Length: 426
Ligand code: LLP
Image (tube, rainbow, N blue to C red; front, side, top):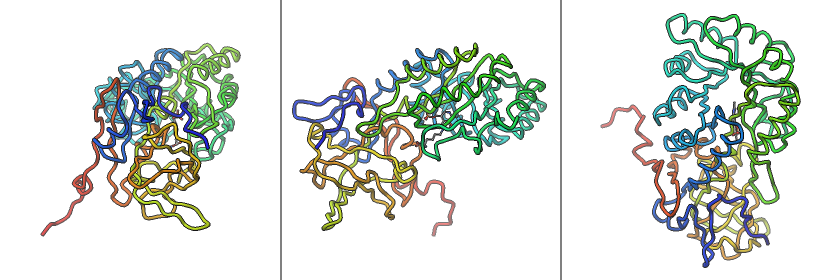
């Protein structure tokens, strides 16, 4: 019978006297009417506040992991608020540069950067390249020999620690495609190679243990595992990567960015690490900043089984439940404080049974067809992992602040769906 907990809503969410939700001073039902559904609604000041918190906590050099949510406006916002940007592909690099972010504010990631991507990164004089394989060393050396500027690099090291999170979201265990292992000596060989190479300047060590990690202890373990290497080479910089978790459903809690930074810095100091400590949060910056507004199209009670509530989006705007079994809450923006006594399964409009948004959602008793229904904490890895499955149009994104909303990504159109098709037309 609980109501939606406020700690799952954006900072600037407010409930009007009639029970309706506003975000950034904008009425959610009005936004849904104006821009249509599904719709991603971000609280712009929430995004800015989290960026500023990250910069205050870690200092200059902290990067926003753009894979969590990226569009031109988001790249500009993170840059304006003093964050660097972590990009992991040529595509992410392109969007960041398109947004006007200077190359030296970018950190280039990726376990399989192509020669073309490395060329782009070097031509843009990115601030750091995080080297992930010996093949990548070969490619950078060849490009520099061909006349491109020598980059400053970090070596991605796999600390071999087990973070408490979903198997697909772990990256720091020994059996991983990411980084050079400390256990098998690869990290030492990578550091030697970077030191000897004339094609790069080694700034330090990078590690990322996984994502949606709630337990600060997992980061502390990684620091412990890497301290011998980081101190031995007197690394100027040590990045702990991203990965700080956020609560998605009632009852979950996670450390703040500030608490995370304090714990990491304390662990580093305790382990004798004197390097500049860097980090690259994604989810913790953007996840709770947004809700997704859907419209309910059908309600199908199956006697003795359950009720299916279908909305006008689904796995194409939020694949996380299907991919990771992730949980979400649901509520009605028209009556945010309503008790939610009924249990239903909220599903999308895609042609498969796995297309679930909330397995076992609590909803108000008067939920009806035509209602706008919202899921909170959808600001990370929803829009960026969206698809066109079933040729469903990708939703627009609005940023709301102090009573006005701006469209930062428009809804996809049917013409967009055939824009890349090459075919003879009669
Ligand atoms: N740095 C590196 C090198 C990463 O690989 C990642 C995430 C981050 C930073 C940012 O991690 P965050 O702070 O956002 O946890 N699609 C999954 C998450 C995959 C994360 C991949 N790498 C999800 O929806 O939960």
